[in-house]
Image (tube, rainbow, N blue to C red; front, side, top):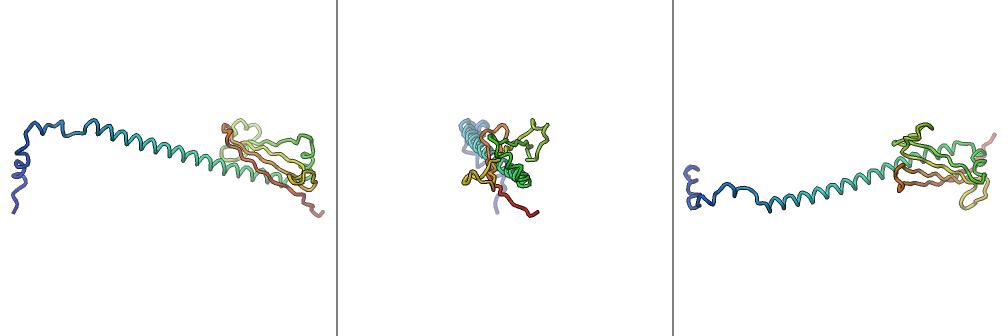
Length: 168
């Protein structure tokens, strides 16, 4: 049978002088603390860089998604418009550009609310197509979407609207 633990404790410290067991030796040294702070700082900086890249990727994905929604809305408007009227707009020397404003979700804003716009779309109609510039049977539609305050973000979409003769 083993002796009780209390009886062994004096044996452990019997040969150790009292001065070497001073309480100030029980803590961390300044070098250890500096190394720990350095490792923590490096890991925090790395985490912040990853967060910044993640937010940039999120913003880019949102811009791409919203601009696609806006482009789909504008293309639908052009497809539903009367071909003759669009053709009349396109034959002018300087075809007018239709500008629309959208909020942060890609929803259209009323004409008076355009100061609150986050996204803007510009639609332009040209006669013919890039391959057949003088064609009367097709219109070339160019739609550009941009985000306010971000000159780097700009999406351009081009489509061709063909004349569809409907039986009367």
